[in-house]
Length: 336
Image 1: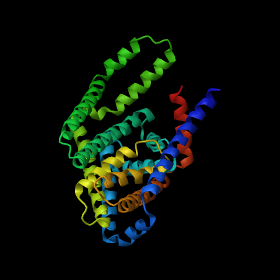
Image 2: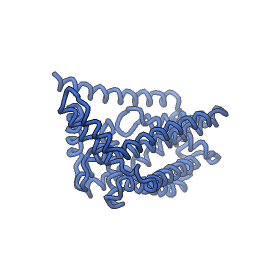
Image 3: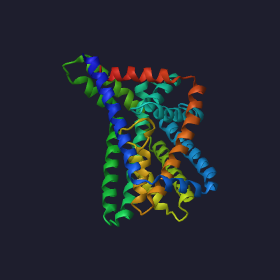
Image 4: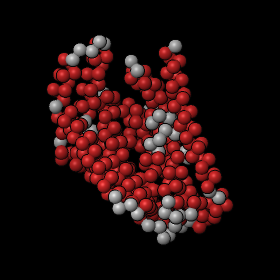
């Protein structure tokens, strides 16, 4: 009976994600004129595509450099780059962001345990959330001419610093925290042992937080990656709208990063396009031009991810079946 319930939960999440994507596609079909989309595609300035692809590649490289620092430089830059892109590629194939699990799985041969590797991926995602929200709020102040936007950004920044402060405290005092967890009495000793073991691995994976210099290096590379991503979006937007402003790309990227965090179908089909389209139309951009730009951005991103990610899986000797089976095993262990 329990197995059936778990399967149903998985199926329910998958169906819910697909429904979100279908709803997003329905919105696009409703607001976008197909003939105008074709017209926009014919008018695009292709001279921007080559530099855009270079910027996308460099953005992935700087992100891989940041992740390698979070991993305490225990793997080479090349391996961090390959595994990073393999994870992104898996996310376009499987639901539930299994790509993050895949990255942890692919680090095991390098001497990591899964629960030691996974927190480094979560820390990277925390960086992403911080940057995404900051970009979104920055763009929103221009959309609404809202002078108090800086106040909300400051409050958010304070909460983020508080969160990192708590993580720093836990990592810095992990021996005391683990000793406290071992001293308390839970009615299920097996659960307590499992929690202690996983927490020890998680805190070990976040050891970069103990070294301010290494933490700032990782932050700097992530900052650079996001800066390059903004430039990438801006140049691509210029290909469709020559008089586009930089703030449009900032708001579009922030909206995209937050939009695709909502559960959807693999590859964020529909949600990717609707996030950017609605963000740009808030600045008065023509809906068809905004959608055409969003669709092109998504296609280029998927093409780059598929090319690099599939190569990485072959290079590292993994099959999609292996990753799926491992993710299912981890799901069972999490539910004990």
